[in-house]
Length: 169
Image (tube, rainbow, N blue to C red; front, top):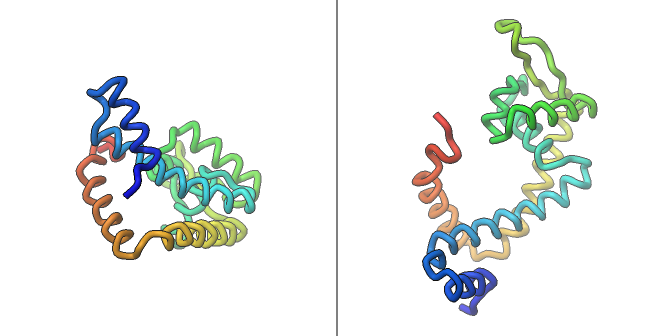
């Protein structure tokens, strides 16, 4: 296989700081590029729907949990790996757009529920379908056997590193 952009980066660092030019840097760069490709493609679809990635994250999270399509803001914060302030700002924008409502939690006066409106359900479904379709077009470029193997290897890698990094217990 021909050297790619990541190989060039690793090679350049190999000349400048050889101690950093190894597998950790290579994996970080390759996964970052893969995430970027998916994010750019999805972002273009979300832009057509007038949504940001964060807004999409909230809508998709609420939709995928099923009826009544509601969570508390703290649950959204944990599910989306956002800060509480970031989650609050996204929720405010979605309330203003008519995609979600906020209602006081019956069991805790200090908390509230964030719930999809019918318009929010419709928008969430449209966004999920659009992003899934564009992701499928990217994955179609990879031989199926390679894509399945990559998915399994990424599952193994994430299981090994996510505890304490992505998942806080």
